Picture 1 (cartoon, rainbow, N blue to C red):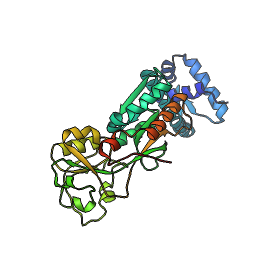
Picture 2: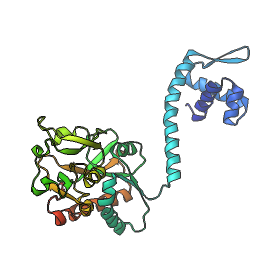
Picture 3: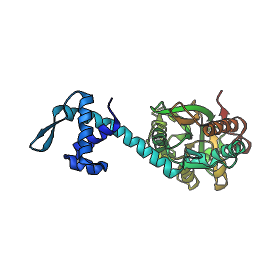
Picture 4: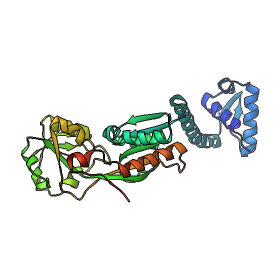
Length: 313
């Protein structure tokens, strides 16, 4: 049976080219390296090195075997890196990632409910844009994400959390503020804060909200974050299609919102690395998030009576 120590000796010997170098790398004696290689050859059933004039020359079989060894060792190196990350960032507690706007509007009530269930539990909040969130989930650097829904991606599981109406934000003095409902046609030749095609959550937004090619807004500024779109509106650069969570925060800054006529909805999910196993802490966070989604209106409906979050069945 092949032993890990034998494979490690073979890898070091291939990398250094000499048994002396391999012995130094493994902190063992040169005869020990020779024994490990001889035992490995016996277990494999083929010769790995030709010994000529005191030198070890790898056979073709050794070169082919080395490729297989390196592929497997790359997996081991990733495990070592993951373990080091866990050690440095502490293995206790929960790491949550979410988009910046959700960290200020949706996450606080979820954490308040979570701490009722897990008092004193350490929580690390990692805010990131949409593509970064997906990478963090795939790399197992976070336990759970609260974010906008996205198409299926390998290595990530999602669970519906809630939906929100699509709004149009504008300065209070804008002519469209007199309307109760904004239609796509209203945006024709208007100064509009648009979207950057940054990833699966923002690509194709113009086609979703403005499907008629005859409607041609003037895109003065493009950005990938809702908070930036609200800020640009507050500073008079134009109007923008926005999500509902930030609306109450920007109302004191002269921004008003109106419902936007579209079949689309903002969909929000809980996302997890698809390991199939979740800790008790992650389960409690999930329950807290679902409870908040069922019971909390986030101040949007009562302040504006324009956009209301609806929990998915």
